[in-house]
Amino acid sequence: MTSLNAAARATYLVFAACGILLASWVARIPQLRDHLHLDPARLGWVLLGGAAGSLVARPFSGPILERLGQRRTVAVTGVLGAAGLAVIGLGDVAGLWVLVAGLLTIGFTVSVWDVAMNVQGAEVERRLGRSIMPRFHAAFAAGTVAGAGLAAALVALHVPVAVHLGAIAVLIALAVPAATREYLPAEPRPDKQPGALRAWREPRTILIGLFVLAFAFGEGAAGDWIGVALIDGHGAAAAVGSLGYAIYLAATTAVRWFGAGLLDRFGRVIVLRALGGITIAGLLLFIFGPGLVAALAGALLWGVGTAFGYPVGMSAGADDPRHAAARVTVVSTLGKVASFAGPPLIGLIGDHVTVLRALLVVAVLQGVAVVIAGATKPLSVQRL
Image 1 (cartoon, rainbow, N blue to C red):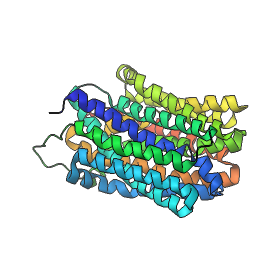
Image 2: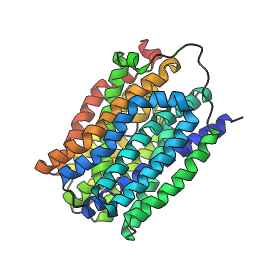
Image 3: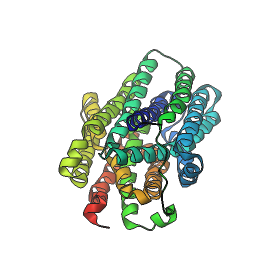
Image 4: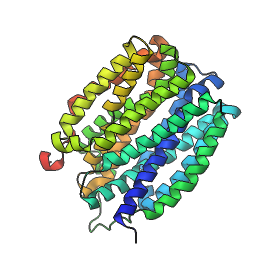
């Protein structure tokens, strides 16, 4: 029988593997852009392929999870996501449509993977009786740091994109199914759980989803555009573009790992509003800072500020375990709208004012998130 500690370790590993997978290809966006001769607007539409697959998958995540269970869902989507990563690598040499096919594959499978691993994380958190969801997301962020850092090194060594992504794909396809063997089985519920349709009519759930959307837009913009903005807007070398994303991710990881105490001490709303302000300050420094060092410092603050949006949103959606699955599905679906709209929006604006200036959109959305952060108050406080 699986122990609680073993399930927690498995959950950490699965979150980290997902981060490595995503960061590995995101960190190679500048090289994909150059090799396929994509201007900012066209690159934005290409990146939309992954976001489209992700958004389409969200409504199906719940039924897939119910049919396969958490273990099988994560194992299957881990393998398929790894296959999509390998196809993205092939797209660097085979052409644009192969790249788009890989993005669609990885977008759909990782979207389902994300919902399933968050449901397992919430289950482990409830049984442990203490807040550890931010640490699971810290493991994801640590995976992205590792993936981006390795990518920066491989860019400097001129390792081909296809070789890099193919090797990572093999490792993930082996590790994720092995880890899920330690997952906790889902506890049977005595009553039938409400579907996502009912959750879509709950004002608090929708507000939490919009809050997550704003923070997810900030995270997604960082992943898609930090490297390009540093290279094109600040004249950085290609390796420094990847390093900027690694700095962002390192800051996110540190806050998620060590920040749970802040949540317990000051509460969700105060912490989230403070971090929203830090995000805005970091973006302004990244965009308008006098030089590359200032821009990298802005990327660090940007990473600090966006660290808690997604994991605390997931926790807020899962406050009531009876309705957690439906609400997490709705919240994560709204969050993924940012992935769908963000790349083309930043790219289209970037064609007119540069990608660097287009990132001001992220700061505006963070202001909205600060205003509606009150929706994340625990249900025991709101009594909704």
